[in-house]
Amino acid sequence: MNSLDFSQTANNPAQPERVPFVIQIVGYKNSGKTTLIAKLVRRLKQAGLIVGTVKHDAHEFDMDKPGTDTWKHQEAGADMTAISSASRSAIISNRPEPLSGLLAHMRHADVVLVEGFKQEHHPKIILLRETNDRELLGLSEPWIAMLWPEAEPLRAELTCPAFTIDDDAHIASEIRKRLTPRPR
Image 1 (tube, rainbow, N blue to C red):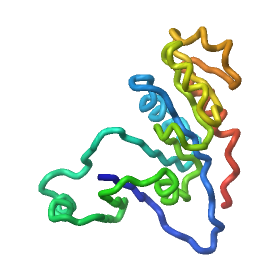
Image 2 (image 1 turned 60 degrees about the vertical axis):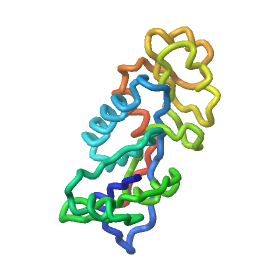
Image 3 (image 1 turned 30 degrees about the vertical axis):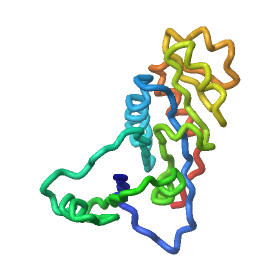
Image 4 (image 1 turned 180 degrees about the vertical axis):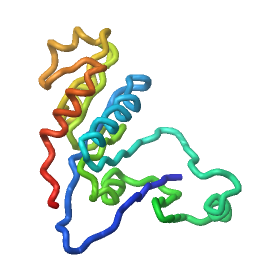
């Protein structure tokens, strides 16, 4: 089951279509991807940016609670279920969605932080927890490397800027430098 959150997605035909800056956060399990994304979201929101996030989950997940109306719709066999309130909307779909399809719903964002989808072609922040993670350096479009202390020996192999795992303030600053100002 897939879910999309469409919070505050009013379409305004008078405004030109925008394309957010998409950054993939990649690394192996327990490398700090989710923690880094949460820190970056907070910092980018403090800077007044509209931030979207996308998570790739290699396992099955369930976001709807048993007994709710949308859960009953899905339990009855609906292939897609949408829900909307005064403050947010979501779609639950019973098929995988490519990253491009998920990003199509986030055009109102200034930046979208993507957790996973390693093989996609967007700038990547690569989290290297240990030297055995060096194969991640071969992914397309490495932009920044985040190094855990155990992976510090990899610094000599890097062709992209490197920061320590706790240097989210500098990463947020680098992201802001890459953004095109939003039309007001």
